[in-house]
Image 1 (cartoon, rainbow, N blue to C red):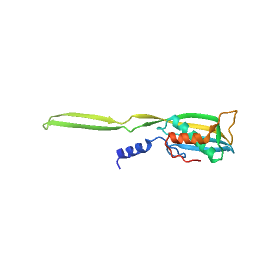
Image 2: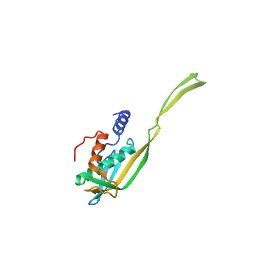
Image 3: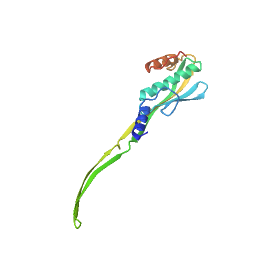
Image 4: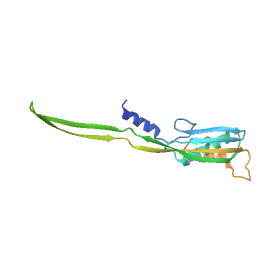
Length: 169
């Protein structure tokens, strides 16, 4: 397979924003139980994922965990978001072409050269990879002293917004 085809295939595969799935090569979510009712949830996007999508997918994972654990509500105890910037420089290639003309006799010779060079590639691209982290407490009942998310509504609304298959939890 030639280099151009390989680069095109890599760009097509990498050219998609991170989908909603466990952490993999292109990003995704991870979570960790801190204590029985407290979880830490991370979502890492790739260079084609918006920071809003990363935050929404982290919130979706919070809702999923809450419903899986038999709770109806969750409250965000801590939130953190940021991004990692990566640079990619394409390879540079230079093509040289020219011709030499020689003329003269056995005692004297002269010549001329004409040619050109053309360089392609060498462009640098910047990618920002967003990440969001939530620490949540899951609740069986809604608390009046703090803001609580309704896990089923969060789950349904985010999955509908991003056209993900919605299955009632």
